[in-house]
Structure formats: C-alpha cells, structure tokens
Length: 357
Image 1: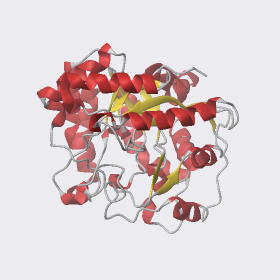
Image 2: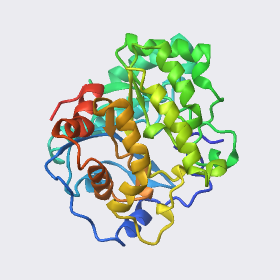
Image 3: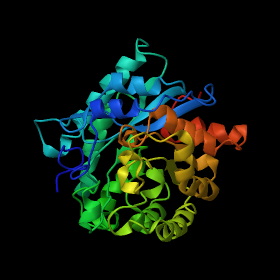
C-alpha cells in the first residue's frame, strides 16, 4: 500500500474532491456567520500539502478558510508526509517537512499575512521503529523547527479489511505500538521534551492505553476522538461500535498524560454521508451527528484535557471551516466560560507550549 500523502495512497478508491472541486461544492450553501466570533481559538490540527489528486493547500488556502469570522489566533501543523527531502539518508527525509512548515510559519510571523500565528507549533514525523537511533532524526527536526517543533506523529492506523484500508491505513504492521524497538524509539521523546500524537482506529485504542501507561511521563494526544470507523465491516453498526469505543475512551481517560482532540469526524472514514450530498451540511446537522462522540470525550477527560480541532483540509470533504467551528460552538453552548477557554485555546496552549490568548 502506498504511504500516507501519496496521491494513490490515503484516499485511493474514494471520490476525493480536490481543492478546486471542494470550493465549488462548498459554495452551494450560503456561508454561515461565525457564532461567538470573539472567542479565541487555537486550531491544533491542520495540514499543508500539494499533491496531484488533492491539489495545493498552502498558506493562502488556509488563510482563506480561517478567514470566515472565527477568532483563530494560532495553529498547529500536523505531519502529512509533505515536502520530504529528495536526497540524503532516508531516515532524515522527514526533516524536509519541518523545514518547509517552519518557512510557512516564518511568513506568518512576519505579520504580513494577518494576525493568526500559523504553525506556531509543528508536529513532525520520525520512524520510531529505528529504536534509540531515532534520536538523531528528532534532534535534526528540533533544529529545523526554529523553536516551533513540539513532537511527532507516527500514524499506526491499521485494519485488516480492505474496506477500511483504502481510507487511511498506513503501511505499518498491526499492533506496532507494542513492538519493543518502537518503544525504544518512543522512550526518546520525553527526554527531548517532545509529545506524541497517537492516531489509530478505534479497535486499537486498548493498545494506545497500554502505551500511555508504559510511558506516563510522555504527553500523548489522541487524534480524532480515537479514530472511530464507520466504513467497511463497521458500516451500519454505529451504536455497537460506539459502545466499544466508549469503554476504551473511559479507560484511556484514566491516563493523566493523555489528551484528546475533538474533531476529524468530517473524514469519510467515520462513515457519515455528508461528502456525498449535493449540498454541504449546516452546522446544526454537523453538531447533531458529532455530539455522540464529542460529549462523551469531554465527560471522560474533562475540558482541561480536550481540544477542538479542524483537521483541515481532510475534514473539508464534509463541510466548510466556519460551519465546522459553528458546530463545535453549538455543542458547547451550555459550557461555562472556563470550560470554553480550555476547549478552544487553553488546553492547546498548555499541551503545545503556545502563547495563551
């Protein structure tokens, strides 16, 4: 299987709308006005890339999305295997992505592109299967990050069914996080002050909990409410799947070093049909569909360990940026001021060591 980020990999077999097609589709619904427009938001999860299938998503495209009325004060870039070095040792190739994003961040920091501090934090990639030798890669990425580098994500999303594999599975063996050499590499993170983004599917959540318990001093961030699947063999079994997911989420919440990102539910792997509709969904529709995952996470982890995320542009397959944040704000309409501060900026500022708004 091709690796994530390859134009024939992650979205192989899907009706993936590229940048231009998405713009035309989203224009079919009149844009919503941003709810609570003064509420400061740190968007802790977005990508920057350019592939033949998906098109370009660079600073101009991101700025257009975040310019819909919400108060996005800063962002965190998440690795997507973009702009890897063409030459040099293969294990050092991911350093190129950090160099690329740090350049984008420097452009934003100039102030010439608006007030939002784009990529104030950078999450890169390093293959922990190298064991302790991965430290050299991590140190190179720290140097390339210009003070913005915060940690890594090594996606371990895996499922043996082809109906799932065509969505986002990486070319990794099952149960990778239990591998001894992987854990030797993982042990390097805390010593360098780095965090780990854990991205897996919901059947793998027990392995994530095992990893968190084994490394209590390493900050972990659970991506996309745990990677719930609603495709392939999981299609049509939403409540059954949710009950198993809920049990694992509550177990993970017992690990104080784990935080959870509330988002990613616009990805087609969740099994919602929004991307198949002629007209994009409203924020009310999104909130109703996503409530079943967002509210249990907040209840289990508490607002102080939850972070709303856009996961753009993958979630753009289902909705517009303004509508996405409106949906989140509808879900937290009854939250206290302190809870909202944590969910929209406070937790992200703490976890990623960013400027607090």
